[in-house]
Length: 383
Picture 1 (cartoon, rainbow, N blue to C red):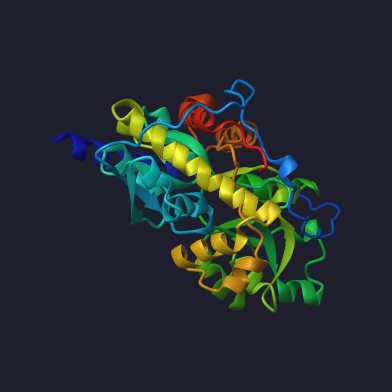
Picture 2: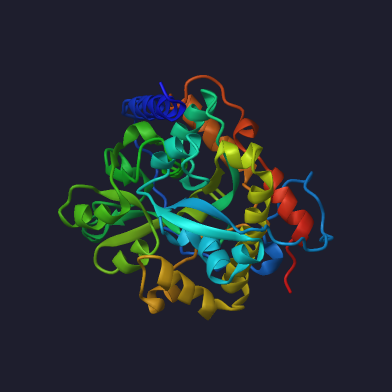
């Protein structure tokens, strides 16, 4: 059997196993309710997240010559606002400066990228952290998380737990305890929203077993709210802002429920890690420059109009006024994954049966490419 076919067959089986391990719901006694909280203001640049203590410090090295001839890097993308670092690096020529041409390939979710990444048909992937990814790595599929692509530092609650507005208006929903028995939509099973919901429910002595999880894509949530098929959901921007009037009420945003949760990540294929390291390193330099432009735009207002224009051209959100209103995704200007919250989510997935066996989070994350970028660019400091 050809090597690519063996990879695809193995990874298809892994994906099915990951989906099959959803735990059954349980019932528990409700407790005291809590009140919704207002969205906090975006942090200042001085509060920018930093990488691990072992990372290389601030002095940048001289710029190296771009790769020649230019190398095409195939990137799996969902075309969401969390892809901002990629869009910015492409549109502002940062990839070109490094001798890279980025080719965007559309996918519906990160799980679909696992097989082509492992088979060498895709160079870079992007999407949500998941138990399925951990199951793949545990079975020695050598793809790795290499950078942040979406987290929730204070002020960057681009996801939130929302409730059907008619339940709030009627008094049927009065706080945390009211979630007991609710049908709560999430974009997929074994992803980051479930640990976040579990944390929100702990405020009143409930847990994930006290609700019914309903897998539903983000675009399908508004219609499911309208027809009463679901009671609540984890929703992301721009849907939260565009749907807030008349359809849903924000209970809490994720930066309050679960500050600094690592929600989305950048993935490298094995050949980019091992055989084409120079390409992976140069790609990361350009990507981190894009992350820094995004951070400056949404914490300090520097170049914000340009960044909003880039987002309107590259995502389904064409309304620039809406992009001005939404709560932005958190993107670490130094590129590092938040290992603390990622490790907590790994433990949650293991404890709830989504991941079989023990997985060391450090086995899944390779910081060496971000380290390279920081060596070239220096630590992020506001200009």
